[in-house]
Amino acid sequence: MPKTIAIIGAGIAGLAAAQALRASRRKVIVFDKSRGSGGRLSSKRSEVGNLDLGAQYFTARERHFSTQVQVWRELGLVDSWQPHLYQSRHGVLSYSADEQQRFVGTPRMSALTRSLCAGIDCQFATRISTLENTPQGWLLHDSEGQPHGPFSHVIVATPAPQAVPLLAASQSLSQAAAAVAMLPTWAVALQFAAPLATPVEACFVQHNPLDWIARSQSKPGREHSGDVWIGHGSSAWSAAHLELSPDEICEHLRGALAEVLGCTVPAPTWQLAHRWLYARPEHSHDHGALADPAMGLYACGDWCNGGRVEGAWLSGREAARLLLEQGH
Image 1 (cartoon, rainbow, N blue to C red):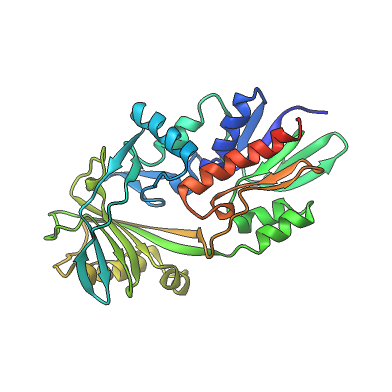
Image 2 (cartoon, rainbow, N blue to C red):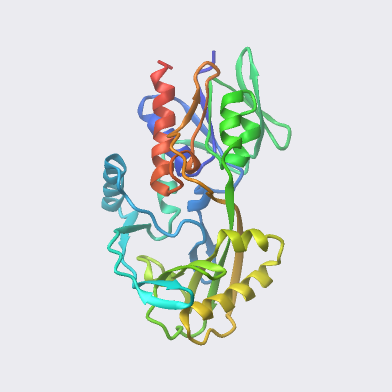
């Protein structure tokens, strides 16, 4: 039997699992359809600077994750972000007294997953479409028809809707993943030549097409030309406008930004829209991770464990623990 373990998905869950297995001297290969790591922690390089279009920050509440965050801080990969935080409800803007400690990757969110790739064999730009359970072990078939493997075990660390077909060999795992609904989000980045006339650096928004805005340069380590804002459309609004063009999305959400801030928001000098089809689970789940030990098949991700960055990391670690618990 082969001894190598395959992990599908190079987000923080998959890479946390990979590092835990590597620490136990297991050989691991990580596959991801994108050109780099991160999943929703990925950052986009652009002509106006590095842009965090997915996860905007993360918190650390669980003991083991807090310890990991401290390690990242000492390595210069993470810093605390304390923005001038506001709330907007029914069009009324008010300062938030929220004292939650928030962290961001530096100089961009993807610094975390890039660090987790260290020492791991990662095969990017490889979309795994099907798994085949053979007498020799698991074979992974990519979208180009190429097989990979065989592998002794497989950990699927993708959003739940993408995990369902990959978990088809295990009825219990595929059914659990199929029961998880995930919501979309349109994200926009808007650059303005002059700073917008507002003290707001971040804002939770209700009763508006937007549900979050942030002044990107308020985050540690960000260098931008101009005044760059990131906005996330609400799940409901995004779902209702999934098929609009990026330019239309930018125009709609620029108007929504002006409503929230209550100041003049001119036409941007540069703009970008990105559609996250599976931005967050609709409901919180506490699976931790999913396992079918008899088949050597596992699943993890933020959708298994609360929907946050911390939950994704813990879910990946739990998947690795469950696999090792079987004595493999």
